[in-house]
Image (tube, rainbow over all chains, first blue to last red):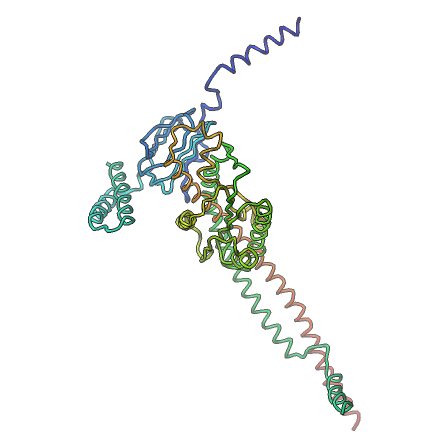
Length: 159
Length: 292
């Protein structure tokens, strides 16, 4: 009889545990943000990340549904646990959200927004737009369009 | 007639053979070994400088590479066994004098080719580095898909990896799965030949765990896979360069040590020979004077 009560007490917390959806481990996200030459975050715990992707910009919180996305040139904003935020400009790359709430943000090139120069970006944008007029074949056209998109994103982010 | 020729051949050889070299020979040998030692010492220092630079840039590259492979590990993507087209990317370089770097990668690739061909699968190899091509083309020449040269002179960049990946994707070889064979850097004195898996878009898309990943269409997945391919190649290049420089450093270091051992032995022989020559001259003079 004593054993049965013991078992009952043991069984109840387990049931409660099975019914809950978001368990404690996924309240933390393990965030890795790196470029080939620099690591910005390595398995860090942050509150939220805003990423610009080909299908639109969205924010990632802990326990976000798993997904794979490809980045487009734009600004990544990282909100730390203490409320501060930091912005980075990424050129392209990929973002992976796994089932265990780990996020890998791999950017081909990434720089903190402060290190970018808006005047140089504007000059590059004008140069690229004038090149678009004179671009002849498909490959050059595609390259110039990419350059325009990246520079426009930089200028928009810095203003 | 027969006796005359044999007599002419036999005589001169027996009298003039000396076991000990003359002073001149030893001096020439000593000079050349000292030059070699200078060269190996300077090669060691160059390799040490390149190694420290490579190791510093390996740290972020490792985080980047493990991040790129994380999806495959977490989603536990496994290639189905019945797929036939395999791809092996072998990472080495153009330059030698680095110990067993190239031969260990070639050995791993050869055994892999043997195993897969035995199971009836089609295998193609991408060689990064001229040394690997030289090791593979004679015996497994028909498996070679691409060769990359001019590797190892400058530190590898992401652009290099993307050029390799572009060529591979443009080659038209639709592989189902593959692996990249590279030398993983463990420490200054040790490295290990390791293998990391590569998956094609179809394998990833049809893998069972991919269902939990939301909002993926074919275009996004293709971009993602191509980017992941470049990342993995970049990771392999960085690890291999660091292992190669550290192996070259140890190889040149042991070469310099061997050279200095030989120099010590030869110097002793030189001094003994010099003393023996002087003693012989003295004895000749003394016995000549005693004869008068």
